[in-house]
Figure 1 (cartoon, rainbow, N blue to C red):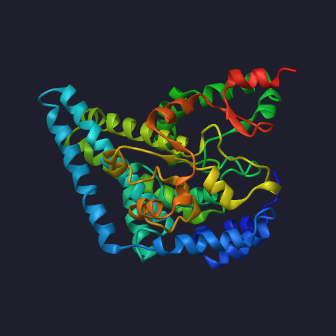
Figure 2 (cartoon, one colour; figure 1 turned 180 degrees about the horizontal axis):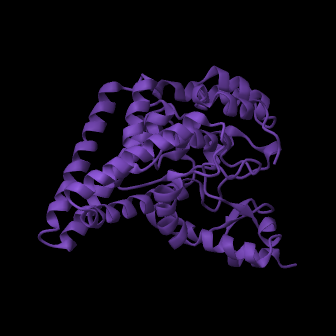
Length: 372
């Protein structure tokens, strides 16, 4: 793996102050060092286009929070009360409950990017408690996710804050067991369902691959674990652990499965963007390596417009409730990879990056391409 240049060094040394926002003067300067193949003019131009949409509207943010958190608790309580009538009714109510929990995760996501509130300190406090609901250590997630934004599509910086992707040549360079493990990892049942539960229930409790010098992030992990343990004890003493699991496990499973699918389709599609470190470009990674998932209006509301992901990657300071406005006002931003729900489902068969044709392919096609 290549050594990080100026942006990478800034990332590790002072990540909390570096949110990788295209409108930041500091980042534009850093990008000038990082991206030899991309002109500063392109960065400056997109900075000017996107800057008017950045920054939080506190009133809209609070309305969004108030129309998401209380309904989540009400739906959860209704699902709990429904147990006395029918478990099928409780399971049915898990669907809207999971929808509101997913929406809260996106709000937590915006808190981490500094786009939800003007005060980052307040946003981080809200983000922490939303992280309790989503079982996501806020500061740990914020730092790994910033790495994802800084290096998305960069073959030299894989393995942190993203879904693992390897090239066709790397795949066939692995021993049989290594190939088998990767195929299992990329299977939708593992990656979305079992993998999602593993990530949120287990790995978030002890992220073993996190550097030990990330002291604030580790403190956040243990603080989160303490709060979750207290909640578990409270539920045990009040409604009982069995009842709690019967209500919350379906909600959690639906949330992490849909959430992992959303994260997957944002960057995993046939004509996505992956380049070697020397050829990687920030703007191209945002425009070509991030999709626009076109959802029905209700689902777009539930997911807080996170499907308009290419704009989010160009400027993470744009709050979710302004992404559609930005898209509508800029025709150039409408000329990216658009995926319907069916298109996005079909991308689940793509698993390997073929460097010669510059596209993501499935295992069967990879075998054909690798055969002389």
